[in-house]
Each structure stands twice: as C-alpha cells, then as structure tokens.
Length: 177
Image (cartoon, rainbow, N blue to C red; front, side, top):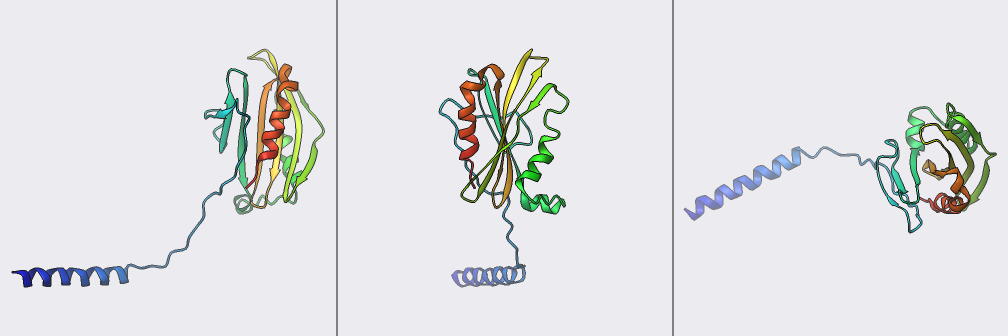
C-alpha cells in the first residue's frame, strides 16, 4: 500500500513538472505608475472627493484650505502624441483653459524655478465663486520631473491668500519623484 502511495506521488510530481515546463511563457514586466513624494503642513491631511483625476488630495476643512495633484506621465502623454517640448509649453496649454469660464478670472505672470533636475512654474489665480459668494485664490503649480508633469493646485478664500500662500508654495516645491 505504501508503495502504491509513493508511485502516485511520484507520477503526480512528474505531471506537475511537465505542466510547469510547458506553461512557462516568457513574461515582460511593466511598471505601472511610479512613486512621488510631497510634504504637507501639519494642519493638512490626505483626503478624497475633490477631483477625480487627481492622484493625491489634501485639505483642512476648518481652515478652509484644499488642494490636489494631477500626474501626467510623460510616457502616457507620448503615447497620446502629446509631446511637450518644455514645462512652459505644458503650462501654457493648461492655464489657457483653467477657470476660463469663471467670473472675474485673474491669472498672474508665471514664475519659473529649477531645483536640481526638477523644473517648477507657479502663478496666482483667482475668480469670483457665485455659489459661495466669495473670491477664491489658487496657487497653481506645474512641476516637471524626468518622468512626469504634475499640476499642483492649492486654494483658499482670497481673503486668506497672505495666510496660506507660503504653505502652498512649500507643498509645491516639496514634490519630487
């Protein structure tokens, strides 16, 4: 009886080996997405529900400050035949439509900066929100790394611009991948 059990186990093992040898189709590994980091002030936390296209969202509802980050992979943009020659071109394409239909839209002149291999553009944007009946201030940031373009959008009531702009800039300039 023990002999029969050993023969069955041996036959099953051979069958598994033959199946494994025949089933080994070469695979090509694809990396999907990549990791980036960003720092937030202590009073802000990760959230969701602000923008469905974003990869990261943050807020503090008590202080009434919000933001999100949208990642545009250079590889995916290239596959869609959207090959930007510079961060400036990417920025111009984005900003022309940003808040374009909003009342009292204002966009400041963009400022550029480079830190290491990372390029940054920032500008101030504002508009009058008819529903909230207040002017909203945005710090609009574009970040270009080797792998992607990022849109970093942080906002608060315009009356709080002076209070939060420096923190919004810290968030923007902390992004790296």
